[in-house]
Image (cartoon, rainbow, N blue to C red):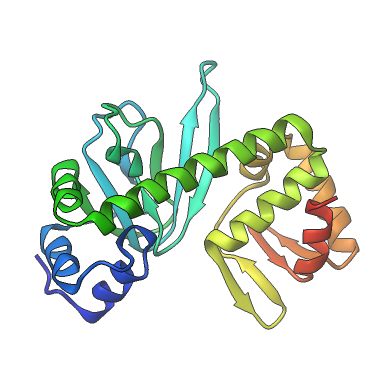
Length: 232
């Protein structure tokens, strides 16, 4: 096990699940963590695998996907450093409902369900944090279902870009870079539309000065304008 570095302490303390935990609990969680590395295209887990671990991404980028009943892959989330995934291990579910694939070389800290349950029994703050994390995930997906059911495609795509910017955005002089290599097809999956419609809207928004849309690269140049589109 690598030594307990200051960087590791920081990323744990700044993660919602571990906020406000006593230093001794953070130290014990770091001691029980197992580092996991995956190269680009590697999998932390796949849909249907036994549900065994929760992960905290330390370096790299990953995408969370799910196969529908018709075999179509749907992109659910794209995550950067500091993000939790596999949090459903905090429930009694037995199988992974999604797949976590590395978009680039990525490293995470991971914990078993037993590690996390032991911490919850020792530390009420951790148990409360876990409830809040699960509630936030449920609320996010409820909101996305509402958007798919009720909103026009322009608003859905604007929401998708803003969500990606909040999850994996990087500030540049010219705007906010969505620092993930996402194709038009993947953006369409997230927004519930087609690759053609995504390309059309991105071209339109680029001509209006809202974004820059390159190959697998999007910079939000005018965030407030995109927020206005998302809010209708």
